[in-house]
Image 1 (cartoon, rainbow, N blue to C red):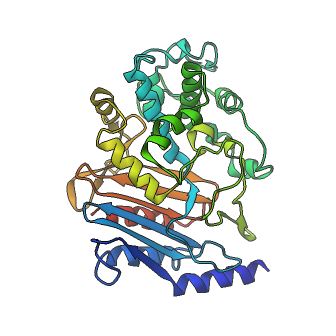
Image 2: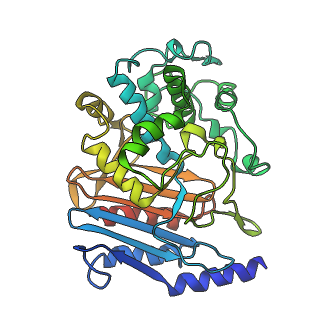
Length: 372
């Protein structure tokens, strides 16, 4: 049955690449030829069941879908799909924290201990030395909970509820990686604590604050913070994990396993709207926007820099580059970004983990191609 389903999906992937363009945008026959080719490659040679992209600029929007949303039925990928966005949740959380900074309710360089007394303790991890800025910029030195919990452990009971403090405590059983502020090292633990900070300051869960401060004002109708709800609102593709026995459908899971570090759902259109609003001053005051976009090198050869919940990466076609983030969640992997000139793009594939290096490279290629 599994082999047959995969064969149906592969055949549909080979056959179908859909392009939807709004008025004023280059049509399917004339524009985005290179992007369409990368999307085709993602769902054929690279092995992803399906993929989608949306590009927006001053001329309008173009949405491209390739492959299948469901390997069992062969249903095509819908470019309007909603999907789990993983760590693309972090820019939303950082925006709420920076709004609280702008309101004078949080200070970036105050210790997290002031809002979460006694929470960060043990093995050299100390909330009296770690500031809010350290959390948002991944310079806290806190170990990453995902370094100590594998996807296979979450797969044993994907509907289980996880408390954020429970996940933080797993990380704090391990020594701190370095003195706070010394260097950059990505840790999901930082954003679990940032979500707890939002609740401590406002008295409401981080998800309610994201809905009140971002989702509702921007009209992001495909975006949600699902809490314990294991489903994804329609239309949505199935989310797959590659195992030694083939593709495992993991569409339904409890998003609290990621919480404020990666539990949200959105669409390519909404991500583009969010990043456009963020970069152009609709969500943050000028001082907090400057803080968010004050970035430090992340190391490696990519030239990437990380601000406060926002990453800058160079573009092959420009000296400027773009701001955005990536997101991995069981079943899905996504990237989104925007240039300061107003061009925005988001891409997604419905396979994670288990995607090939070629899939990862081509998702990045799709995003940079769209932004160029």
